[in-house]
Length: 152
Image 1 (tube, rainbow, N blue to C red):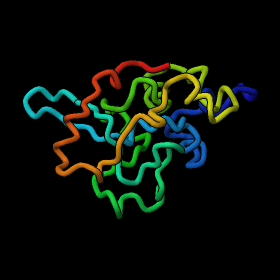
Image 2: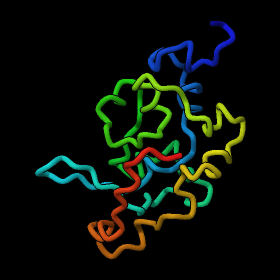
Image 3: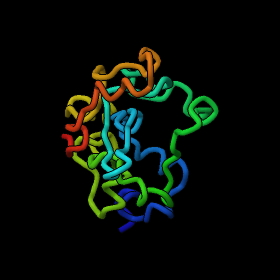
Image 4: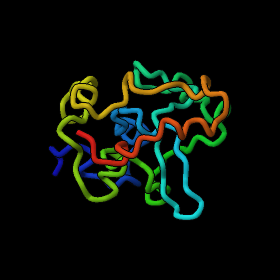
């Protein structure tokens, strides 16, 4: 047991802040604009990214202060993961919450932060910035149902 990695030894709630943050694989899928159909509850992902997202590095450019700039940015915690069904199926947080292990391409498994991109899981270079849209609803023109599928 002691030789196992922390994500196999601990529950999500038992992880330190640093361990929790290290689960992020850097795919960028959670930084995409999504819409929810009010009648059906269906989540519609788009290939439009948050104004703070760097589409080449696949990171938030102001992660520590993101809520100040993007008030509706959702802070993912062990206590709200269950309610966030829109999280990508490939997401480490979701995988562990569902009792699955990390994917082989996850940087904590591969030891390489580029493995998520080589596996085709990330959205590196595949999105546009929300700031270029004339109207936020225009993001629906870039709807991408394939982003709901398990990636990698």
